Every structure is written in structure tokens, then in C-alpha cells.
Length: 259
Image 1 (cartoon, rainbow, N blue to C red):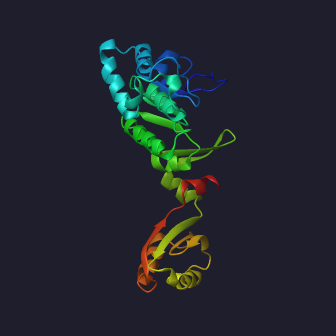
Image 2 (tube, rainbow, N blue to C red):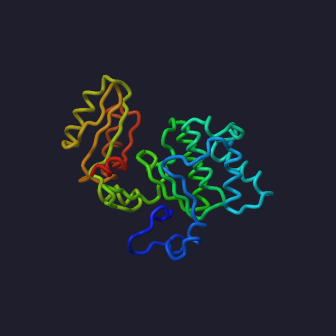
Image 3 (cartoon, rainbow, N blue to C red):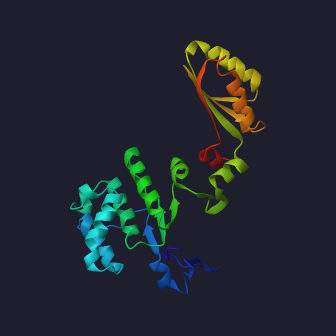
């Protein structure tokens, strides 16, 4: 509805202060949109596609070359600048869709699963592009990749069957809905594993083993003991247990989503 593909049946919504029904044109000028399924023209090259949308946005022709250069660099499309869209891989088509959404410097950009179909390396490149774009505009992003939420989101909303179940910054959600700490420890040698397991059972009887192989162990601890207490306990026993390194972290967004 905010992108005006559907009109609301009731109520009001605003984008940049404009009513999406009564001030539709003004609201649309503020929006950039990357749909879930690519709406690109297969016979145009990447450059031509960006020029087309620059013209639609009302950007003067003299500014097109610099705009295309900037967007191709940002979205890692420089190599494919003269390639027709129909010949691009699925991941590069997603990059182009994001670049199109950024044409004209909109104040609000809606990205619907922008990294879908990308390999891990390309996905991280896309994350960098989104982070840079977010310096100059607000970004509303939907995703099924919860590591993407950890990497990019300032405010997180978790939806279930079309309803928002919770919303807030990541730390707030983890503190409110997280049920445990996660402790990761690495030992100097696997021969100390039994000793370490005995220590965990005695010191944290309710700890749950998440991973335990060779020298590395991961446990979930209940929240009845604070961060400081857990750190102090590990630091005091670090040398005795031959722990080379350890970390204590909050519940992940993925664990919160399953709450």
C-alpha cells in the first residue's frame, strides 16, 4: 500500500508526510521500490535501463552518465554495464532492481528481498550497497535471511501471517524475548574437553550444549545470571581450564523469531 500497488480500504498512511491516497503523486516522488520479482526490460542493457528510469524520474540528460556510473559502482554492475538485462544472472538482475530503486535519490526506499538468489559473496556486496544507500535515505527491507537482519537492521519488525508480532531495535527484542546467553569457548587441546564439560555442568547446571566437537564448545545459558557474572566466572577459570578464547553473546534474532 505504501508503494501504492494497492489502495487501502480504510485508515490513513503517510510517506514523507504525504497522504498516500489524497497526495498520491507527492508521495510517489519520495519512494524508490525494488519488487520481489524483477520488473526489468530484457532487451535493454543495464546502462539503458538506468537511463530510462532516470528520464522517468525527471533527471536532466546531462546528469545521466554520472548517475549511471555511481549506481553501477555501488551495486557492482560496472562489468555488466553494456550487457542486456535478459543475459544477466538472477543475482545481477536483483542488483539492477536495487539500482533502479535508488535512481533519483528517493527519501524512502522499499526493498522486497533484495538479495534473493544471490550467492554469499554477492549478498555481502549487496549489504554494503544498502548500508551506503541508507546514509542518505530511509530503507524498509523485507527478508527471510535472518543474518541479513543482524547485519543491516536498526529497527526490526517480525511478522506472522500478515500481523506484526513485535517491533523494536535488535537489543530491545533480544532482551525482551531472548531466553538465553550463548557462550562459545575454545580449548588449547581436545584432551581438556572432559574437564571443561564437568566445569560447565557444575557451574551452569541448566546449560544446554549447542555444539561440542574437538576443542570448540558452544552452550546456551539461562538468563538468570548476568553478563558480568558469566564473564567473571570464565575469566577466573580460564587458565585452569586451558581456554584459549571465549565469548558471551545475546540471543540471536533467529532465536527471537522462533520465540
